[in-house]
Length: 113
Image (cartoon, rainbow, N blue to C red):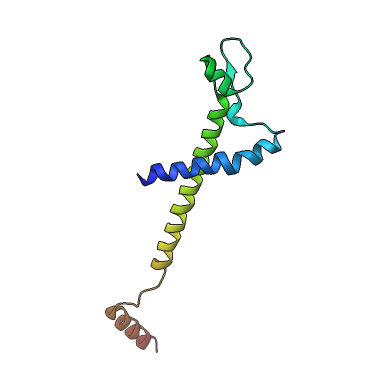
């Protein structure tokens, strides 16, 4: 359930935050409206195509979904990496040597003298 909500947030991030600037950089292209009509007709928008019920390859929607997938993967990667780094910091604290190791170290040092 949390995964579905997380996916919805990332999808919204891609559609509403990331894609508008990318589209603006690419001469105001709305990737969601990119399609190839398979019936040979010309349609102004994806909504007009869907209203006509014509078959189409909706590669703009696919492109949006791929970007969302990549961003979701990157976010999950960064979360896992941060958690792993926190766990390493906890493990990095050196533990005090055991009593028998301390005793053996003292004996070794005494013998060297």
